[in-house]
Structures are given as structure tokens and as C-alpha cells.
Amino acid sequence: MSSYREQESLDGEVLPVIVNNNNFAKGDPTLLSFDDARTLFHEFGHGLHGLLSRVRYPSQSGTAVRRDFVEFPSQVFEHWLSVPETLRRYARHYRTGEALPEALLQRLLAARNFNQGFATVEYTACALLDLDLHARPDPEGLDIAAFEKDFLARVGMPPEIGLRHRPAQFQHLFAGSGYAAGYYAYLWAEVLDADGFAAFSEAGDPFDPALAARLKAIYSAGDTEDPMTVYRAFRGRQPEIAPLLAQRGLAG
Image 1: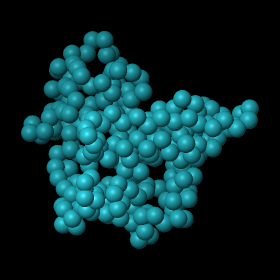
Image 2 (image 1 turned 90 degrees about the vertical axis):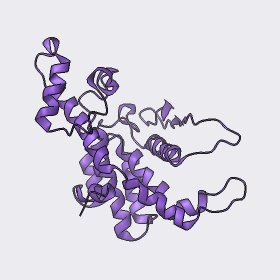
Image 3 (image 1 turned 30 degrees about the vertical axis):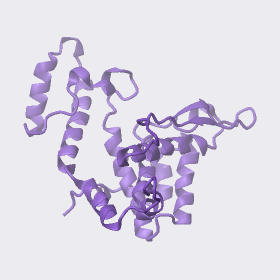
């Protein structure tokens, strides 16, 4: 997702111009894998963040929020892809229109928890390495190979897992300042998105209108309020970690 023009009302109402470009594999027809569809929903969540913005100042518009909050509006929107009602309606055979068989639908949803223990440790290790590396007072004299070895020993990294990103090619750290010391943001946003969508599960309706209106207020607020203020207004409390553990299949 990107924007050609941000919403603002500083000198009169300016409407946003948002682009959501997904470079899927071309075909005849172009078919989306489940991961492709998740990307589509994720980026459209960012798109909604820009489209629904209702702020005065352009510097606070749309996705111009804190780095560790910007992925919440996109990641929470991914959940509606996996809602069975969505899959039953749209996951159809491109020639016959036949709906996805119910048994396959349930297997697809169950497979989301496959290897989540591995994935959680792999990601968390990189997030901790990022923070540790940026806390070093003498980066010029750092032996990066020795640092990596020492870090893995200190966190007790299982040798069977290893790092998702080795320091030398960890682009989130070094390709720009946007995610430097902020790689943890995706997992923190997943705490928020799991807890946030759990509100709909608790209501027994993934399309609950009252909850949807409160969620829309987050998309509209931009950076006009502290993220936890707008989150608490939506959820009624601070975020909790239990929904994330359940979502990843890690809860007993």
C-alpha cells in the first residue's frame, strides 16, 4: 500500500488517493494462493488506514502512526480472510464455481498452527538481536560474527532453529531507519490483532456492527491520539497476550 495524496483538512478537505499494488504471479486466469489472499487483505488493511483517515494535519494522516502500531490495522484485517463465511462465499473453483469443500476448509484453517513454535522462536530471536545490536554503545568496533555467536548463546537459541535473518543481510535493520530497533513491531502488532479480533469472537459475530464501528475509529484517528488510548476505546481494556498464544496454537 502507498499513497499519492494524504487525507487532511488543514486548508479545506483533501481526500486521500491510495494505491494497493499486489504483484501476484500472472496467469490466465490469475489465481491467488491462500498466502496471496492474506497479503491482499493485509495490504488492504493498510489501504483502509489511509482511506478512512479523518484528521486535520497531514503529518498525522492515515498510516503516519508509531512504527509499533502501524501493522495493527493491516494485520487485524487479515482475520476476515479466514472467517469461514468469507471462504465459503469466495473460495470457489474458478471454472465451476463450486465452493471449497467443508472438510478441506477445516484442514486449511487447522494448518495455520503448523510449525508455530518454530516460527515464534525464529522471529523473536531476530527481534531481540535487533534490539540488542542497537543498544551497543560502540558499533564501530563490533565483531559482528562474535556478537551473533554470543547473542545466540545468551538467549539459549536452539541450534535446530537458527536466525531467520543473519545480521549481514537483515534488511529491516540496515536498508533504512524505518524499522531499525523496531523489528519487534510485527509480533507486538500480532498481540494487538489477535486480542482485537478476539472481541468479535467473543461477540459471536465477526461482522458485529458496534465493534466494527469502534474499530473504524482506529483507522480514522491517524496519529491524533496515543495508540493505547484508541485501542482501549475499541477493546475496553489493555491488550492481553492470551489470544496470541491461542491463535498460534501455543496455549494449553
